[in-house]
Amino acid sequence: MTYDLIGLGETMVALSPPAGETLQNATVLAVDHAGAESNTCVGLARLGFRVAWVSRLGEDPPGDRILEALGREGVDTRWVRRDPRRPTGLMLKDPTGLRVQYYRAGSAASALSVADLEGLPLAESRAVLVTGVTPLIGPETQAAALALLDAARGLRVVDPNLRRGLWGSERRVELVLPLVERCDLLLAGEQELAELVGAGEPLILARRCAVRGPREIVVRGAERLGVLQASGEWTEVHVRRRVEAVDPVGAGDAFNAGYLAVRLREGSVDDALRAGIQCGAAVATSLGDTAGFPRNIDAGG
Image 1 (tube, rainbow, N blue to C red):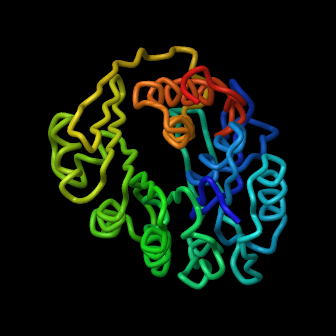
Image 2: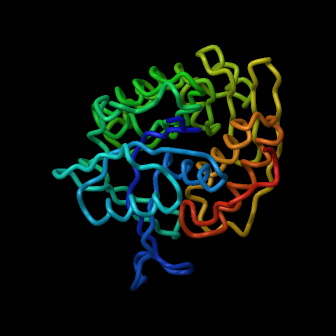
């Protein structure tokens, strides 16, 4: 069995008020799912790639809902384990100040371990993906993330995705850098890289990361995006702010999916950047982490 990409990480049930309302005054909430790796898997599945998502969910209705939703998107969830003792995580989104609150301490996914990778066709997969959230949510999850990257023989993709308020957040640089050192393609925010390797211009940040192992580094900034390739070539594009953005949460994951879609089809960095920008912008104009993700892209492939 060959997958284009296998992703490892937590997905939570996500609750948010309708457009124009807040958690404080809403009388109904929209129910969705959210998780960096599964968001990217959904995007790639919509673009025709064969993907699998690996995680743990509680044996509860939120876990049932997530499995059904991802299954409808074409994401293979056969490697997801159900935990009868721990719940599925919860995310609350409030458009007021674009605030997001997580309730994931003690969640099923925080107990992910190397044992959960047993039987996975990692060596045969064209790519694997893990983000920095995974090593930050529990004491065994970093080992699982590292084992995923060590066992892979295809493209190893990492998004640092540094987050505060998690089990390992106070040690986030220590816990996430080993992932960076094992990856081939690094997809990262400018501020995250500054925290990991020291402040500097995007090209400087990318070069500091390159000496640690990655062959291709994408640096996402608020107004510009840059890519450093293995050849040393640096490509930079400026991005216009989109005032029509409704819900920017998940836009980075959508960018990653668009970029990966083109690179997995051996498209150029320029086309990959255009695809990533297109996908990220589309998701930001709809409520939910994946609702607005397109089913085809203009660039690449």
